[in-house]
Length: 222
Ligand SMILES: N[C@@H](CCC(=O)N[C@@H](CS)C(=O)NCC(=O)O)C(=O)O
Image (tube, rainbow, N blue to C red):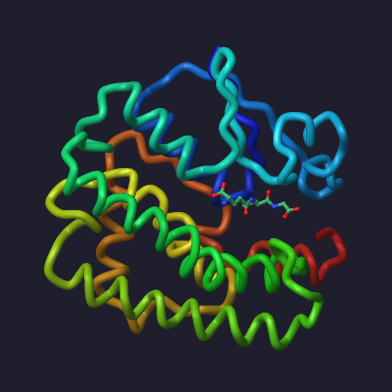
């Protein structure tokens, strides 16, 4: 049985849950509680020594990265339109998977993690304000890059949405949770609206109410 290890507020897990929904794939979802550090307990480290979600097992195969899981699921379940198996298309998609894992992860992802979850993410030193400033600069720069790219095309690699769009959507759409406004980036906002209108789209907390976590933290419930 295809098993996905995930956390409901993890955008990287959400990428996988989005593709599973778009493909309507049966699977077992196992919640790993990031809030109680379950990702660093021996039982989960045996599945993913990196101590991160998402991870996936399918028979004897284990994958520990959202991009790898997107590639595997899309290739083994129909490929078109999510992962067209043509060299140029696959390379362009890889370019945007790398963008999601670098510019987006260390920009808008990190600003959200620091501001809405109060955690220094992915091994950053606990120099909170300096980390937040750096993440915001990188976040805004990546939104400028995306905005210029999306000004003349509907989706990141052309006329159809692919796993490139799935990999970039969550943290870009959740940027306001890190206090990064999307309003200076109209092409990005239009892309987000198109993405949300896709058949079988599923939401994540914070898309429509970016302040929900900060209110929980302020009330002592976070
Ligand atoms: N490159 C990984 C990054 C995964 C990642 O950053 N996961 C976060 C949640 S979104 C996590 O599990 N963090 C737990 C921790 O750092 O302790 C991927 O794309 O799957």
